[in-house]
Image 1 (cartoon, protein in one colour):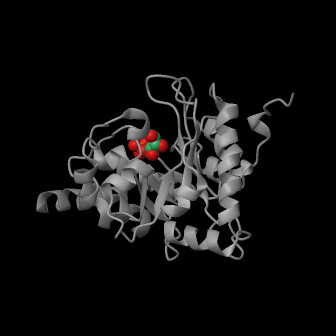
Image 2: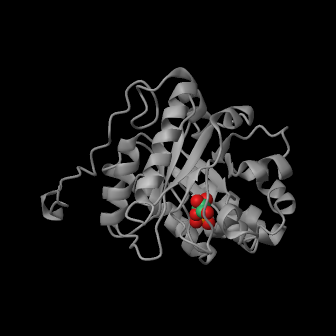
Length: 292
Ligand code: R5P
């Protein structure tokens, strides 16, 4: 059996950007036209970054705080974000089909917070993802979890289906309760997900060492927000993540559980697309909140 190697031997060249020949996104130059077109809807070609709104939490957590009523919570955020990341149930029941926002469709299912979260399966047929005009499909991957083998199998199935029809897959680094969100773990998990074939990867931010996580992953990384933080801290985390190479966020609770979700989404946007410093972005958040 292969052994984990020593971290002293690693050399990430984190200060040398990866060449992106043939397309503006890291590691995507050899993909087909449809795949590139969908990725260009997710990542803004002008900034190369994205603000994805994750509101798929109900598929494992039920009516999460802030998402008790999807029909009330999501429409006010619609114009502040780039991508809707949700389940097909949420999409069909609560999101207008008139939307021009691309959809990153949650395509794994099968577990809840009441049992082992890693016991998932592929929860959407590729035909339904196409029917819903999905710009991408998302799958949870619990590297090191009880269900690791099954989750990686789900990723394989979705990547193979996505390759047939030109739909990229977002592999989501899912951390079980017992696993550390440090650079060593996240570096391993994001790299495994990219090598199995995901066209982009969601990771948590970590410090120190996030720039090494990014450098070791040959495709774009977006960060999840994780549990709700004070707004200033969440904006600082976004800033550090993009500064260290993340190509945006796929953020949920730190937006929809904010005191003012629309103001927070716009402040996150200012950081991600405008490179705004965290203190300025927090000022923007406060101004927008006061105005509303
Ligand atoms: C978990 O249910 C989903 O993968 C979420 O999309 C993910 O955790 C991102 O949401 P948050 O920013 O709330 O962590």
